[in-house]
Image 1 (spheres, rainbow, N blue to C red):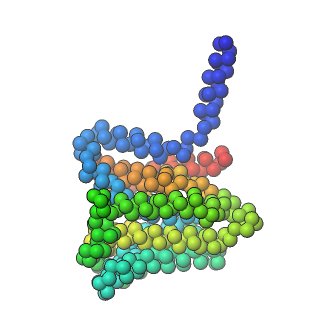
Image 2 (cartoon, rainbow, N blue to C red; image 1 turned 90 degrees about the vertical axis):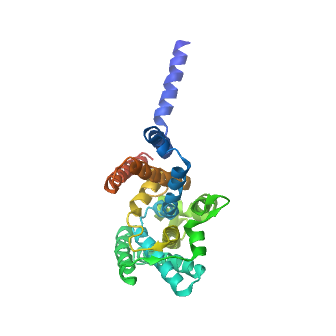
Image 3 (cartoon, rainbow, N blue to C red; image 1 turned 180 degrees about the vertical axis):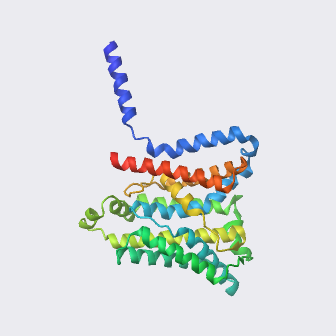
Length: 326
């Protein structure tokens, strides 16, 4: 009997050691960090205003993270999203000033993001350049255009309808940014998990050659994914412009690090083939909570960037280890 119990304990121990706990890292980390700030910051952290601010400030990052999940699922990367944020916000603000039509401004901002994404996709698929080099180039190009079109000046956004829809409004007592977050994440999850397109994205990211042999149009899939990434960055720019009641070329300047951290920590493999939209949502909230908690703790922006960098290093290490063990 003792031998049977000992064998059972040994079997359970082996299963626990062999279990893949990496997909749950973001959830465990979120709970641990939340508990830490709740204890160390007390009422300064545990109040409705702070918690709502964490969610609303994470909204643009979450929206971009949805596009980034698809890009990383392909085994690619998009470094241009931060620059797209600024250009889309400025384009929307300029169109709004010129036409006084909020919907034209929204279309202008989204079109800018989609266009940059299309350019990225063309050079990656047709010219066959690495996504890292292509998006690094467009990151600088788009940032330069954003600075040029307004001569480094900010553009105010005073239209009340635009402000309500893209950041300042509430619906049923809930900030509109929360609704945007829920809607975009739900749409991203549906596309990734319930549509054939999502399965094709994961197949291409897992092994592009095998996907092509099976009949998947890898060039088309890659092109669409980069257009989606650019469009989500454009939407994030509109959300910034609506919440801040203005646009400037500095918007999105530090968002790339936060987006990548949220997506990789959330369980999306850096090398493609594995993705989690819900994990990306929790990851973006995790990063926003860390930034807010560190700010309450008196840390500077530079120190917050150091913490984000450490998180990315840990997340990338876990992602690559998971790929090697699979």
